[in-house]
Length: 369
Image (cartoon, rainbow, N blue to C red; front, top):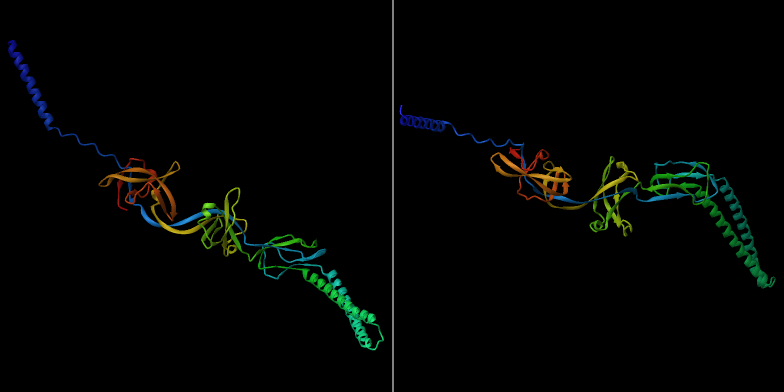
């Protein structure tokens, strides 16, 4: 075979091989597109809603007695021979709480009555002498000076009788004070009276919460106090005890010079029946009305690193969508709804729940609620 034929044969074989490759490649199917990433979560959506929300102001404070009366000894140097009540006991106005031994007082009364009787007899004699002196004055049997002495004696005897009666009244008053009486309806909050002790006049024996009436004294700032007025409704809650509704009675006229805070006095009707006691610490919420606010359900929120976030849907195509993490500023709460002050618009579509399982840019599958 000549050199030229060999070259021609090689060219023909190469041409055939190239044609076969071209035909084979034309028959192979085109590679399929890569499937989209699997959704991170199947979610339902929710939109922010405008809701009337209460305007509230919160403060802390203590439960205290509305008024606490001190009941003391009004007579001294007598022995207590009976103490009839204990701390926590409910009493009525005029009820006998304790009694002092009254033997010495009764003896003083008897002595005073004897002095009164003697003064009455002396007065009767002095008046009779004065009357006789007036009769004989015209006859000249007695001088004018002597007559004046009889008349003065009658007036002196009358004065002594009045003094004796006053001393008797004092002793009768001492007898009355041997019984220690409740000054008002209420509950005994303290007792220092001891059976057998000799009390000094004015010594404290009992303390009484008048009418068993309690109040809450909330501490607020100067700016907060300007929002309050008498009659505002308040809910006071004591942890592990309960809550009760009351109303503002009055605001303190001055503020504390160190803290610049002031006290708000809140009446708590039937607080004792609700289990509250003086000295308990409570949190109060002042109800100041309501206003509209943009809200989202609590389930739509995710708390991360001390901030609140929601996930907003973007780039939705069919059931697939992407989410973006949006930081929001929260305000008031009404049940399971929270007010959003910044970060959202009313038309935004948000992931309704499960936000804590998502990250910014995740793909989700949107399903019907």
